[in-house]
Image 1 (cartoon, one colour):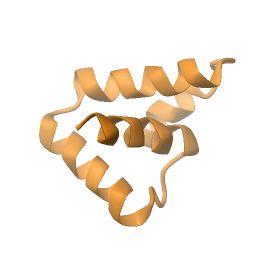
Image 2: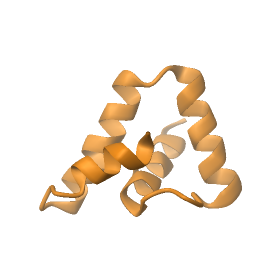
Image 3: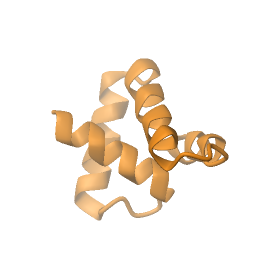
Image 4: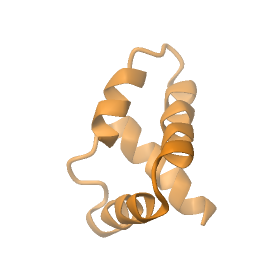
Length: 65
């Protein structure tokens, strides 16, 4: 799902706006356990399998915790 969101925001011309949009979507619409699992995956595997924009957004979420 995170990759689908990243693909949507990839058309955003401003990199920071794309990352912010992904981060905001995950914060607002994902259930806390889903966010925690995604953050854990990103920490444990350096975001293996995640679109680069999604990985950056998730790492920003992780740094806020």
